[in-house]
Length: 268
Image 1 (cartoon, rainbow, N blue to C red):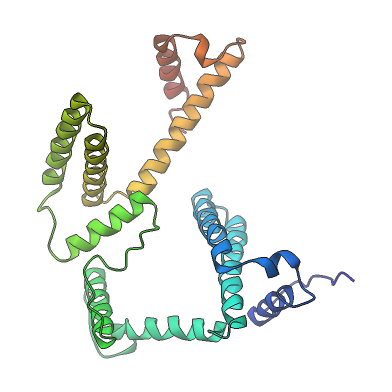
Image 2 (tube, one colour):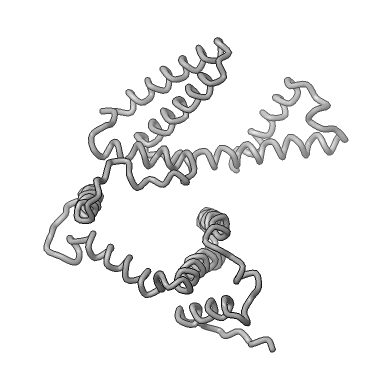
């Protein structure tokens, strides 16, 4: 029998729904899932939250946050069945961390700026690692699974945090020119491995330059892709109206249509 939905649910009720889904009389698909099989869904839901934020629709944002929360609840329920930890353990862990790493809020320390908060956070992380007998290096904690541009930004931020940084953006801009010249040399040599090497260096240099300018490279690339998509769609639709495809036109004709698209979509 289908149970009627309620107007409001509590967090504990959500946990109960998850337990029911994974019970012997629950959902066959849910019961078949593992932590490994859920990884892709976690990534997908995270990006859908980011898209909802960019769209500026609170209702859509709320819905996508719910989907993301479900992934947290789902993974925790699997660990609970393994008798590893419960949702209370997850909540306790993050609450303890927030209190411990905000001594200026929950303790007697004083800070004067967001920068000091960031630096103190890093110090506390190192202290916690030392207490566990771990040696925490500067670049530890940046997940290898992060998208490339985001990972590059985090890596350069951490290096800059310990003084390994350009004194001004101009130095990073010169590095781009240097890496581009080296890429040109690699292309001229026809050495495929060298081309891959130098292209990677060029992209990293560009990300670092963007960081120094206060630009999020992941967001900047996303906006560039969106512009390209809009312009190419415009170009393709214009040709379709004439019964043609891009392959039916010369590159010079396509460039003219591209310029037309840029003007037409200037405010998009």
